[in-house]
Length: 379
Image (cartoon, rainbow, N blue to C red):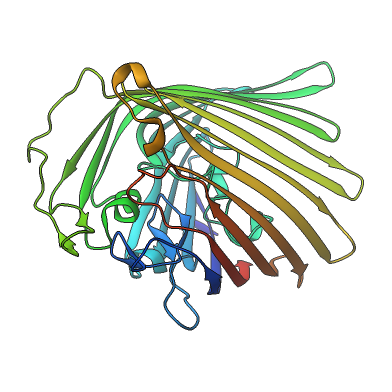
């Protein structure tokens, strides 16, 4: 659509309507973990999406509506892109996810500046667009952290290396997130913890040839949190007062390095997805390891897929961490997708989550069996 002689605007949107029912599971005595009625299964750590043991269907954790618009300015390689998303997990509040400008320097280089998605994972750029995903929700053991966006600059380079298509993305910036959904899962649904990632730097490299694709990613930053109203206290069944200073307190140990690898294949009717994440925090007392493996098959409009995903934290005992107080869990998922057309699909997903956390890990959600159904649309 031409708004003026030198501005071309295009718009699009996406919708996911999802409903889930907890089929059963186990939990700690009493059932109330972090102010949730368990068994529980988080499906979107970044936004605080979690299914719990309440009766009946739950639609909030995975349902969302997004709108995106782009405006090309003057035909000189300049454009602006914005995206807003309303999520059930955030009680329908509208969040600005993207707002950045692009300048196409030449056919290989593109410079972008503004608010974008952190490219931590293979599906980071499309993780809100259900139609673009083979699952109802992304494997929670791998996806989701306390920050998912950043404000800064990036440089994208595309080229051809013989028979290989390549894309390299370098970025730098920072992010401040109010009321992190991640900490609502670990501190209680009424908790407010603000997050700041500073000195973000990193990038990702994608190589693709025929039916095979590999992606390598690296990101480093400082991390800080500010707990406003305390965390859930299982003993008193209430929120304990916040113990962290209300001011931002820089910490020399609050650093992280994220390493990622994805190896994917689409061979004839078969598709395979794999992703591996390792997060190192120099000077801290634990490290994170996560991976998922998926195998699917396309048969006309049908696509079944089996996924195994795993998360575990590893104690750094030299820093005083306790091995029996570490978090660990696996999720085995079976998904059946049916494409209604070129822009909509139905998906049915069964998740079987096994909590393998140490006996002294205080916020274990227990085992869970979840069934979800979604309708995904792009328009």
